[in-house]
Image (cartoon, rainbow, N blue to C red; front, side, top):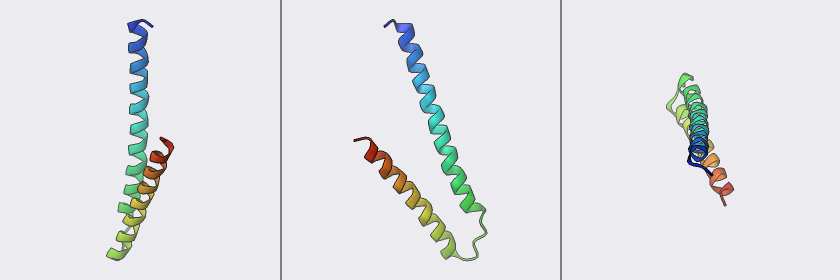
Length: 69
């Protein structure tokens, strides 16, 4: 393979990774903004929503780690 092709493939992979990371961050930001937009009447409601949010993130992280094996 010549260097130009390798450089082109590397740039394409880096762009794809950047796009995926951007989509991922947008997804989690939207989920967090949804929690923030709620008008929780009590602190317990906010804590419950935050715990559920963290649980979703932990589940996703475990899923991704498990699929790497």
